[in-house]
Length: 370
Image (tube, rainbow, N blue to C red; front, side):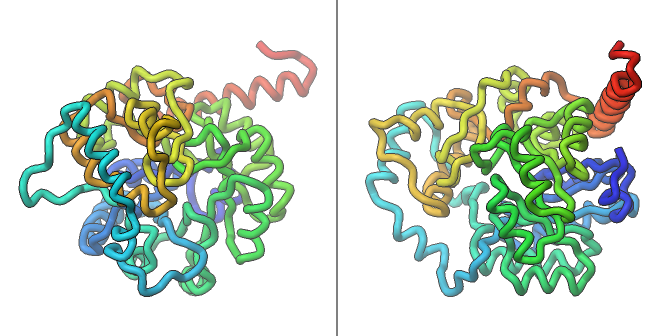
């Protein structure tokens, strides 16, 4: 699964794996792909440094990257407390009532919430970059549009490529104009923040819109056949996230959540604002149903929603309250039916890719598929 981009980055397979887990990121790189560690959960720079140390020490010298969530425009002087103060009391009461309805215990006294979406904030994201640029990362990806121009320049000064996710050709053109090196075309099927255009339509539209920039296809990809389809549509690689959640290297800290993922079908996800305030595909649960119910107060815009539900999500996860327990995941969850190692996933991807290419070659030669 070699392309011009994978050769440029020195990886065997044009498979870019996004993950919040250092062990998964390192295993992806060791398997011949390109591991990308998600940074949004790191509010403490020392924790990010610790995990980048681990990735760097276990990637066997293979390249890897970092994914941040950073607004394109600078927003300076806004603190987390300022944002917290904007959250209406009615929404806080709705959270309390929903948790009480399901008997979710409180966190222990003095126990801080372990889940807070604050990486979007200017000072947090820039602190992450201060740490990351001390490491030999080869790629900086931004999940919230193009990074600020000075960040792009800073990355380029260090020979670090910059990628940005796009859900439409219009967004992709803005990335190109901003000096981005790689556009990730993220289709409707993808987990996490995603747009409304399906991958089969979006990928070639973005390829045509930003040529000659390389494009990675994301959303609904979890087999070698789907990788082959993405490359046929003009992508120079694929960006995979959900498929790694049920790998043996992943550290979900929740057997109940793993069971839910393994049991879920492709129709068991929903695109909801319940988690962050922006539409994000995730497992459908009674938590998402409550927030999407017209009788409820409705979600708040990003980042207010993420801060509002942070402690609630931590409590749901800690106590594994199954009716409410969920996670961002794409429609490819229907293929995630067993726990496998990252290496086993790569073996399946490469085998399926070779079979798909052989089949297309036979068709092209006129001998027909087998």
